[in-house]
View 1: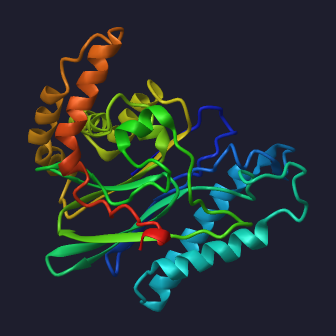
View 2 (view 1 turned 90 degrees about the vertical axis):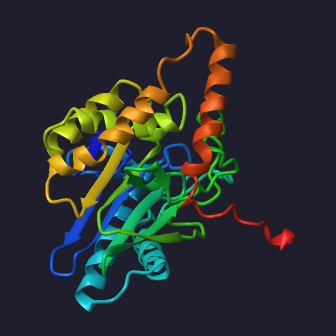
Length: 319
């Protein structure tokens, strides 16, 4: 399932979400890509219809193509996907596609074809799935569990990684895919049960909510009201359009469930729990009460939410 929303039609810098599944092996890949419009705002390409595309627009599409090729090659070779080969694939493709002309605007923030990426590679094992997140930037990969809710598998490559603080600060990224600068594809993995819901999303989905828990609330309440995966996708698209200030893209895969009805029923208890926990809310005009409520809810939600997040990297000078 995928959801893709452009705030400005034909000009969105998120690439279309990528959802791939290889039936013979049961393995798959889901991914999202958010072109970095600030550092990649220079014109990079003109399409056959005469539309000028920014470096951010091109970068996200090139990265999507690179991830798709990487997965296909590993399937053909029956090899286990790894972050190093994905990093090399992306670097090679972005470098070959970059514009031969350099922007006249020079600075530490300027990038050639910059984009984030959040991907999840999964493959079945006996009674479980091996799930590996691969990412660069501030797009995120998650697992959604009926007992404990939403859990990021990624940690944003930003100067501030507290999810509540990020909602008000929008900190700069410290690592992003690009054609002209070194980057790293980070990786973190877990082993899950045979039934598993995996999600990748750009910040248009989770970056414009009141609390980090609201993203889970939107996922589950739209699931509860849907009768099919298509209806769930439509409901999520309609919901995110009411609150986001950016392009928004999401890729979701639910494995191990025989049908949509069982998937929805499995999350009924968690849906009721988080809905009751997040309502009622203080008057938004009462800023102090709202601040206290948000901080309290985050303190209660954070420990379980961050259960599978990789640790904060230790600076080299402190090692």
